[in-house]
Length: 229
Image (tube, rainbow, N blue to C red; front, side):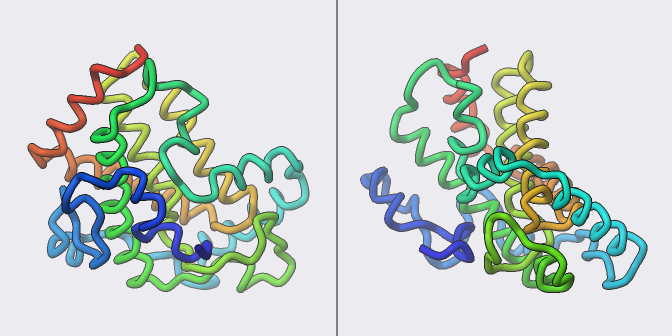
C-alpha cells in the first residue's frame, strides 16, 4: 500500500471487520454524506502560488525544518496512515476495546471524509511543498498525493469533534491532540500551514454534515457508552 492511497478505502484492513455488509465501498460513494452535495460544496480555494499566504507558508516550513527534532518526525511517522487509533489511542478515549460495529463505524466515517478530501484535493491540485521549494527535505520522505486541504488535519479535527460530542468534559484535551496531529504534517514538511487550516475548517464543516444524518448520530451515541469521561 503506497502512501498516496492512505485516504482511500483499505481492503486489507477492513477484512478484520468483515461481516457488516455494505460497510466497505470501493466506488467513492459515501454512507453518511451525500456525495452529490460534496461535489458542489463551497470551500475556499488553495492560496495562489506566490501569494502572501503562499510565501508565508514556505517561510514557516523552512523554520520548522531548521528546528524539528527526531522525536517530532517519529511522531508524525506514527500517524502516517491517519487512523483514529493513531491519532487518539494514547489518550485512551474509551474504557476498553470497542465492539466490531463501532470499529466499522469509525472506518465508515473515515471513508466518507476521505471522499470529501479527495474531491477538494482534485479541485485545487496544490502540489506538496517540497515539489515547489527544493530546499525542503521532508522527514517523512517525498510522499505522493496532493496538498490542499490536508487529509490528516481534516480527520484529526473530525475525530476530535466526535469525541468531544460524547465526552464534552475532555474537549480541550481532544482538540489539542487534533491540532498537534495536524501540525505534525507541517513539522515533517509534507503540508503547507494553509493546508492544515483548510483541513480544520473542512473537519468542522463535515462534522456538521455528519450530525445531520440520523444514522451517524445513532452510531455516535452508541460510542458514548464506552467513552472514558
